[in-house]
Length: 158
Image 1: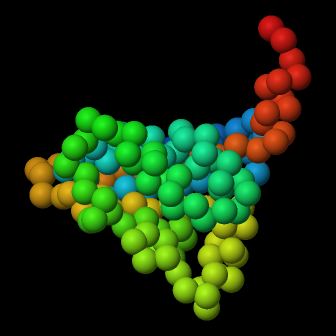
Image 2 (image 1 turned 90 degrees about the vertical axis):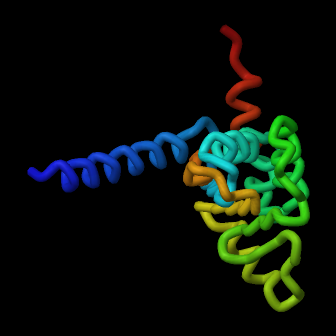
């Protein structure tokens, strides 16, 4: 088997396993994918992607099918060491609809609700920084935070 073919097959299997693990989180009802592009480098994109993915406010908004771009912006803002992130250049997209800086109009709200109610939700962020030597991109996977998660973790003792 050629090395490139093996690499592609192995990456495909690893990605599938990663998505399965994320989807199988305690009390999970949705798979959450966060894609960050336009970072200065991969490190910046990864910090921002993980800040968004690990935010309890983002996770609960996804669980409640609430396209709350403010919670995503808050998570980006927590990356305080990345002072070159300019809110004027950031774009936030839920599914295929931009929610910041231009929130969808009335006509697109039904589509946005459909996106947020799906069992897989993607949040894409373009940081608008780019220009470094690295690719400035990172994709991470996780799940929502549900009432069941709270019950599972509140109802037992170690």
